[in-house]
Image: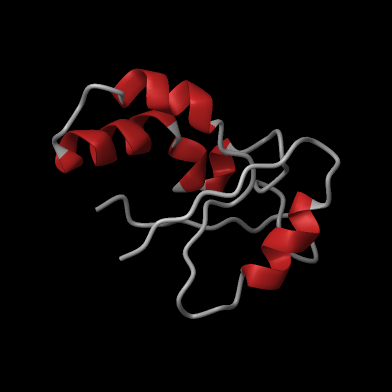
Length: 90
């Protein structure tokens, strides 16, 4: 699997760009903002992929349960603003 990281500054149209890629069957992406520089500092010397994955889940719970994502309002999805998404952490 090839991994490509695209990084942009605030107010650069990243939400639109992300929505354009969202339905592509060969692309997986994080929903919303991901602070790569902060995460890489936590795992920079780690070689064990299971430990890296566990660290991702622990540090970014809002990617797996949108009820925890208040900043980007992923906790208020749907017509009535009462829907959310869950992603299996495994």
